[in-house]
Image 1: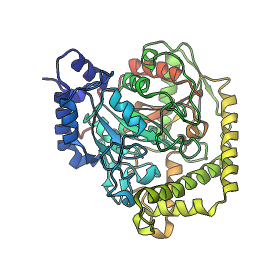
Image 2: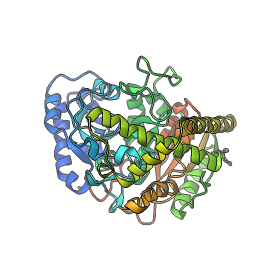
Image 3: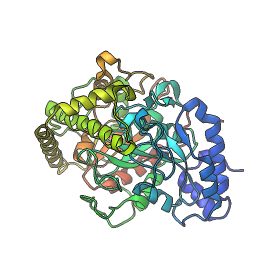
Image 4: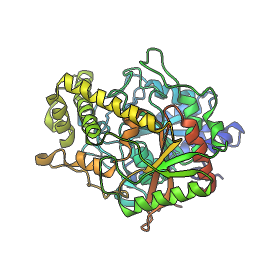
Length: 475
């Protein structure tokens, strides 16, 4: 009898390949665990258990993860004939009529989708709490947030329901829940993975797709399976021409690592997060890397303001897009207060304001790229605070943007890599004195996931984390 919840996706797939277990056994075990844990987590908002059982009994593609159970985030990805809500009451009865390009690739890799996971409405807040589905709870402390917007995916992986799950990232939504839930989360280079068929890019390139995992090798092998452009994509990420999975086992050499605890927007950084940063810097030094306290010019308030302009335009355009898809008229009461207020802010800006903001973000990208001519990696905290209590980002109607701007204080380090398009990862190297996971962020050069995977593999071997399990979900 195997404890599947302790095995990563690579190990589960090897059991299937060797004939020791069947895909159906893996999928059924995941479903049973989901049924036992999800009432406490509220991570899976649309179970697809019957569909998953049928898929597991049928012939599956001979991909690297044949038979491994998987979850898709209910945001910026759709599964044919499954609910697709984006966390919004505007879409509460909407059902997708096709797989997204990314989901096609997940299935081609042999993964079996067992459900859709909870995200904040349109991914706007760094938590997974909505009026449509309620609150997703952190398995390390159920009074706390999982982070977001990929919080449902992170909670499910942390508790071993599935070994990895889809996640995406517009301002940190892979790395934030990875930090909050003790997982490895890599945001790939811009355009490394597809957004089609409906989108070439989203919000001028801010959105990136991948996954949260327990192990580095799973993240790398999955990226091998899903990376690459689709016909008609507006731009592509540079290819390294070799396997990311192989990079994990390679030594990174002596890297020149810049590090800083200074938040780009001047936000206060909690002592636990600074402790995590210093601990990671010390570990990197022990592993032979050169550590230099330095930070690029992020553009200060001008970059933050430009990011908000693009982000608010995204909120407005997303509401308009799904209003057309559903044929429903957008009304304030259908949305979270901050979503509606952010969309109104977006509509108040002109097209010239938008293009000016995009130009400002591109200017920031060039300044940061010049910094990376001298450094291989930048090390920062992933977050400025430990996992927050549930409800931290709630916004009353009379102060509807309170939660949104509070998110900037909570996650001031992650959004820069969305602006620049660089790969960045949250690595679960630290825990607070209260037993809460605290991640650290490593940012690589544009197109250079390989260096991050080599470094992450080295860190994982030096300080393994995958066996650490949250209280909720332990046997």
